[in-house]
Picture: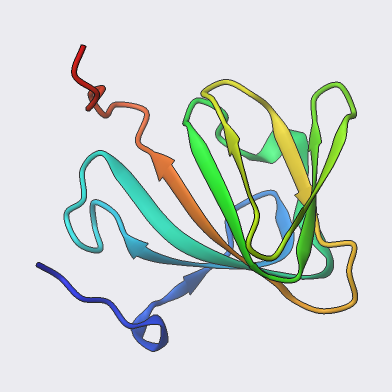
Length: 122
C-alpha cells in the first residue's frame, strides 16, 4: 500500500501543451502501478493541449475537480466538462482540451498504459 500526498508530487509539463502543469500520483515509477496511471492536471486560463500532442493509443478518463474544460474531438465537436463531471475516451480517439474559463481548472486524469493487459475477465 502506498499513500501519496499532493504536496509531495513533482510537477512536469508534457511536450506540446501550454499553460498546463501535471502531477502524477500513481504510475509505474511513482508507486509501481502497472496497468494505469493517475494524476492531476492544472490548466491555466487559455491553457490546454492540441489534438496532435496527446498519446491517443491509451484509454483515458478526465474528471474535472474545479473549473471547466472544453474538449474538442477530431471532427471539431466541443464538449464543456464542468466540476464534478467526467469525460472518457477509448483508445485512438483524438481530442484536444482548453480552459476557456477565467480561473485555473483542475482535473483528475486516469489512463491505462498502452502495453497493459486487459484486466476485464471475459
